[in-house]
Structure formats: C-alpha cells, structure tokens
Image 1 (cartoon, rainbow, N blue to C red):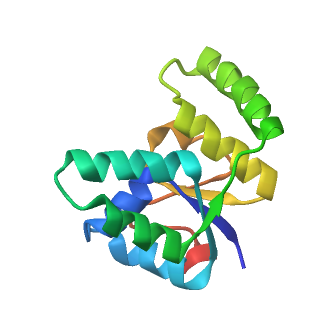
Image 2: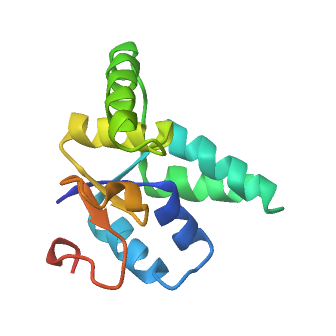
Length: 135
C-alpha cells in the first residue's frame, strides 16, 4: 500500500466533485492517505471564502486521511527545504514545501495537480493518466 499525501488541489477536486474526483476517491479507498496540517488549514480557508461550510470539508478530510503533525525538527527541515526550493522556483510556496518535506519524511508520494511538483520524484500528478500504481 502506497503512503499518499493529498494536497489542496486533490482535496478540492474531490470535495467539489470535479472531473478527476473519481481518481481521488480511488486513492482514498485503496491507499494509506495523509493530509498535512497546513493543507487542512488551507482547505478550511478556501471552503470558508467560497461560502461553503468548512466543518463539512474538515470532517471529510479528517475521516478519510491521517493528519500529519509537525514537530520542531519538521519545522526546521521544512524551512531549509522551502529556502532551497525558492531559490530554484520563486513561486514555490510554504504549503508546497510542507508537502514535500512530509512526503520525504514518511517515504510517501504527493497526489497533486500543482505544476510546482511536476519534476519531483515524490509527485503523482493528478490527471486523466494517473500511473499504474493507482490503477
């Protein structure tokens, strides 16, 4: 079973019933899924700003995935990683760095639509052609 971290784009796709929601649902049903605390906060904010009930999204995410806590060492390592990635990609966000650091920590993959991850070995790009590991 693959350890899979869902990023905000994957969760939003699932929550809104988007074109690729069935792909996300398959991953949620078949893999060991995780969500970072930062992603959980990001989605809560986005859902609230769009006028929907953030409690619903919060319950769905916490029911269908394990929440990854951040330790002091995690915070330090992710700060270093964020700085290094920003030197290469100025728009690489803190949330992106959190996902990458957590994936490396747990030896997992990141399910995402975010182009910042297209060159990362930890990424599974969420599109119509998800690799066979999720088929």
